[in-house]
Amino acid sequence: MNFSEQEVLKLLPETRLEVYPCAMFLEEFTLSELELAVKEYLRIHNFAWSSYTYPQPKGRAKDLDFTQRDFPEDMSDAMSLEAFGSWLESKPLTEGSARTFCQTVCSIAKGMSEIYRYSKQPFEQIEDTFESALAIQYALYPKSGKLKS
Image (cartoon, rainbow, N blue to C red; front, top):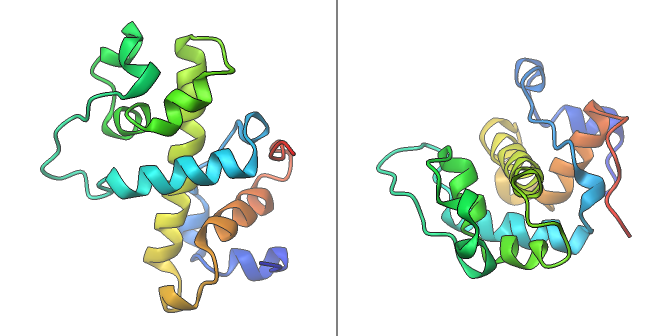
């Protein structure tokens, strides 16, 4: 999707741009890693935060002590992803790595949710909300790192 910076920013009202989530660690991910993780996250996360039960971490994540704590719902969901365990394969097994993953995946997914909720366009007409969420990220936070190749 090749929107200009101004076109991308018009997907959300100005009041939402002020609180748009910042995915601070994009440079830690490849496009395919992040897209896979966000798609998996969107399948399980309840953005309304209602009737929630904490999912159980899967794969490698279930063996890490710090994933058993009472994290906020969004982090708990992110740490339950198969993509989380896969991403940790090449990272240090630390709570910092987990937080890097969760903050980035949750922020992009929240951005996609914001686009869906506030865009003046019908959702079906937005070619790719994932790409749009990344474009808004880079437009609002031009100093944020770029995804790895």
